[in-house]
Image (cartoon, rainbow, N blue to C red; front, top):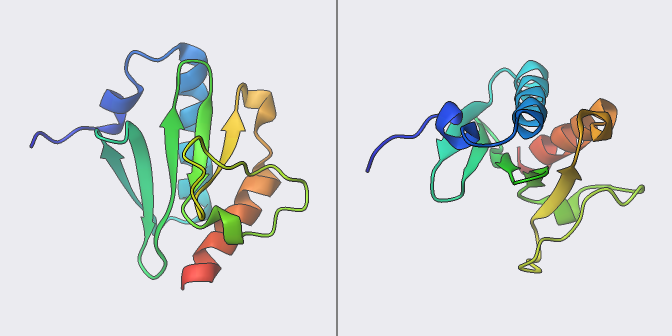
Length: 121
C-alpha cells in the first residue's frame, strides 16, 4: 500500500479549504507537540494520535468545509453545542464543522483537544 502525505490529502481542495486545514494542523501540533500526525487515504483525512490517549482527532477536508472530528466527542463537555453527530449517527464521534477561517474558535478547539486527551490518558 502506498504511503500518502498530508499534501496528498489536501491537494485538489480549494485554497480556502487548504488554509483551514493548515490552520487546524498548526493549532493541534502547537498545543500538543507529542501528537503523531498521519495522513489516511481511505478516510481522506489527517489523524492525530497522542502517546498516552491514542487516537484523539482528525481533520477531514471536504469540498466547501473542513470537519475536525473528535473520536470520543460525544463524551466531551460542549455547552455551546459546537460538536455535531455525523451522517452515520455514530455513538461516540463528533465533528466541529468549519466553513471559513473566521469559524475557527481556537479556545473552543483547544478546550476539546485537552478534554479528549485527558479522557483517554
